Image (cartoon, rainbow, N blue to C red):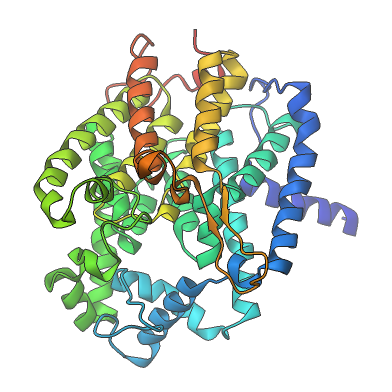
Length: 444
């Protein structure tokens, strides 16, 4: 075999890992000419934006202090120090599980600075590309230039979403969690491993636990059991390798200390609890209201996700549950809302296949909500931290923009229930979608 053939085989395997080959009878995605022509320009514009802003505001684009905290947490696994008794970097505490510190341990082997930042950024962008490709692959279209182009376009646009941009800015792991869960639940074939990713993601950060009730409600009992077993396994590993910290976190109650994360009323807390705390003074008075409200939107979110699943819209269902996980959490930073990415893909997919104005409106609404609107880029301060996102805009008495992520979740859940109320169910009794061809077909 020639070197050229070997190289082609290698890159073919790389392509298959991101966007597996489709079957011969898979439908073709019809992409409008204007969108095909715009794709390369959008990609170039996004790259140029990152390059120019990085040169002008290097700290404002690549602060990545959370990456330092992860590295410091991983270092405690190697040197035996405590995870939770004191701040690890400046005044920043480690707020993740002992299992998370264990998987962060390899970061401690890398030096602080450009090397670690570069490795992290490349891996995160590749994980984002994987998550986007996985979503489009699940939709069942033939892998051709049209689909590859849309995957690249959505990845470029996602890089301009505030949750993704801030994830890169802080050196966060939200895209990693998104890729793990999407890769786990959006499988094109049945697998006995389904649920492992959810359990591991929850073992790193607790919010993906919300996917386990979803699996139970959609009668995917085996996947729910696998997810729970995997989650328990991460806890057990923490007790083996970091016993004192595991005791402090799981039994001592560190996992429930919201004060270790930040002020509940902060605009950066894009949750129902933050929403209420910004409306009522003092914020502590909203505790009971939040508990009731969280239960209500939990029912709303799960109902929407179950309906979406039964109608064969698994991508929408997973997106809704992901958004729910951030909305009901006591504290979710804006960059936790990376679930706007699969929601945007669902909306764009339906807009392209149905040509309905309502789907184009939803696509535009999600984009406007998630986009990293430049709010604070001081021209004369290269060390300034960038402020981006609709929630950072002081407008409409703070009620709309400061709470837009939660509002978007509520709009999405209601839209799902209304939009799919008359669609035909395609999920079998065991929760498995048995008419996969419908994924690539327009909704009648």
